[in-house]
Length: 168
Image (cartoon, rainbow, N blue to C red; front, side, top):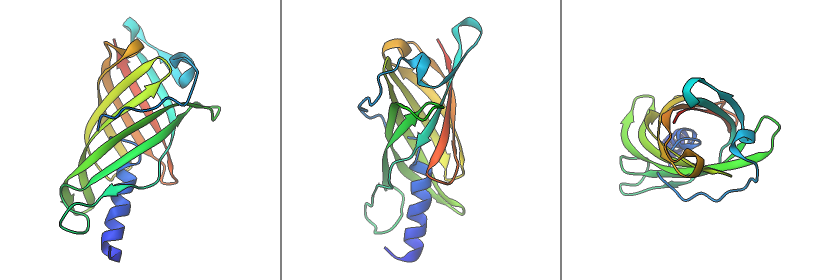
């Protein structure tokens, strides 16, 4: 891939670093969700979960034509940590490129967050900007009836913050 294509590939990598296709994620933690992250209970059973994200290495499936183009897919499998630096879960997914834009790319990402007591699914149409709004589309286990919204902020150093606002 040429330098320009590599640069666009890195933009996609930054984008895909933490948002993202439904996947079956393996659990790497043994803590309950209430200990998974900074959890703030709210009214009516609402709660907010906050995780430190360690993004996985860049991985993109480069479909024809060669170089970054519509239809290419970024895949990821990230570690989720609590404030103490302990891994409490993982998130994984994929982000197909839907459009090349002047500042990089637009992708539609689907992801699953896997925690000790269930999974939470996410989706969003996002760009390579550091802040990515997400929809909480459902879950399993403790999160079986959940919905809500979330946000991923990329710090630019291979880490980020994932915040999920859950409504039962």
